[in-house]
Length: 358
Image (cartoon, rainbow, N blue to C red; front, side, top):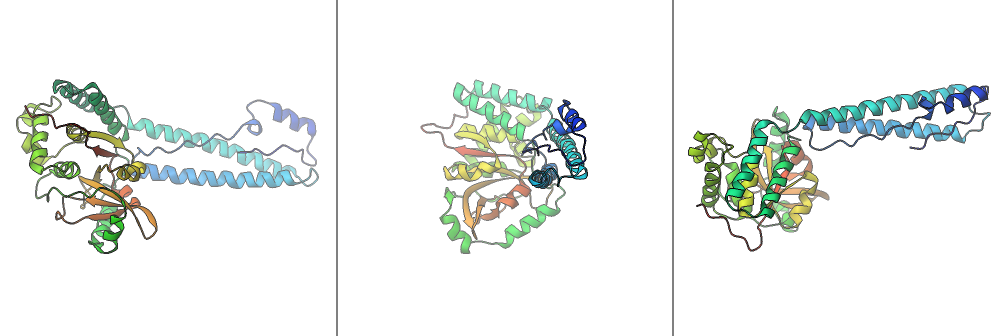
């Protein structure tokens, strides 16, 4: 931001003006602070509010800079004390607004807080299990990075009040199958994957999603998940003794999804903006979204990114709430509305085999 030069307005005492300008810390001598970027790991409503406020402040700066440039273009005789004072006063306001905005962003980030004790215990327990299973140091490091990355994203989207989510799901459902979307996805970036099955009354959407992403039968993925949970010290004794019941009634949490994905290949936590790039590399992305009723998390798989009506990206999604041959099609904006965390990209590790269950 270029501050306007302080030409001496007509009628203003030169000595008084110069004295004021040379005082350190006075408003005329201060630079308007840069506005902090709004991180994507904030809850959706806070992120949207701060994004809008930032855009508004940037526009106010642009207007002020234009007025300052216009003032500078005037001769000393044309400049007035009132104009000069108004520009200085407005700059002081912009400085205070920037300081307040940056403080608000910092407080919003701080409110996410450090990992709670349950998170810390789960991450430590998963890493301990990886060591017990004899996973390589490289795989353990990758696993730990992914676990910490997923925690750091926290919840950054989703409207758990349900109204906007239900509206988005209705729009997605109304698009149906085939037609232009079949042609557009065929030209898109990503993999042709088969759905592992249709979810019924259980909460095992993560198992279906991982089975679809890895190309393995549902039963194999479920057995591997049950084995890992049965060994997981982060779960209670009752949960470890009955892992199938846990998966059916409550499903897997984010850390367990990463652990299970890593047991079949390579997992990496990726932000929403990187989904098209990752899909273009042939790596499906597991996403946690708000379910159709707007009150619960649901796991699905993004398989392709494509262009629809000149807009990019749109996504093809395998959803276990559908028939196996059906696909969902959604825009980037719709995905942002329903997304609860950053995604987990999966890639089969070259030359690897799934660790034995015993």
